[in-house]
Image (cartoon, rainbow, N blue to C red; front, side, top):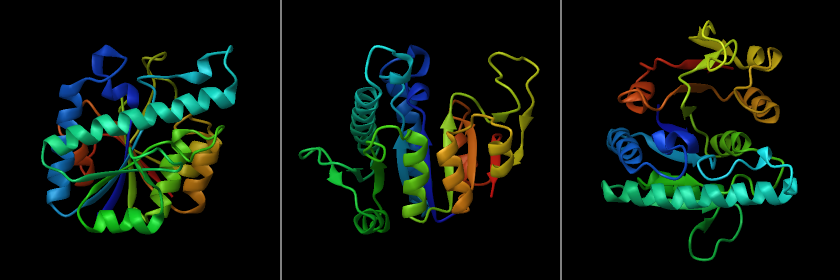
Length: 231
């Protein structure tokens, strides 16, 4: 693969703390990404905001405002993780779909691809900048825009199952599954709009467990223990 879009779960980055940041976890991620970037792979990164905010669980706050808080949570995550990446020797840049003072750059496809081709690891924060669209949609949209070869989705759960493995100990894990089957069976891998965008733009995805040793490196090399979603 020449270019990937890596989606990192906010909850996974919190480690056992469940909230905030677990620096050893993020440093381990950074070292893996550095290894693949040093090998010539270009990497864009999207980070969820679940380690700070799960707005949809609140019935008190207006949905639009809750989603805006979630967007800002992803900006905080990207600033923090970007600095950890820099500490292990990578050059980074953060893009947002809205003006964020001097914290980030305003997203454009041309600028993002130029940054990738110059060897930078780029972060996409703030989703797509509008409420009612999840980080899943932001991930697929940015992957399509930067013409990534594949989305790599690193999560707390190590793949796609036929039912929730947290609730069903007999849940079956798929090694490979098509995006059409994911949609038809309503497996909850991503929201429907993002899944359809994946399907329409033939964007493959691999879902794998972040906490497995060298999971990012192994997935880039085609040795993932996760689930490949074909298109």
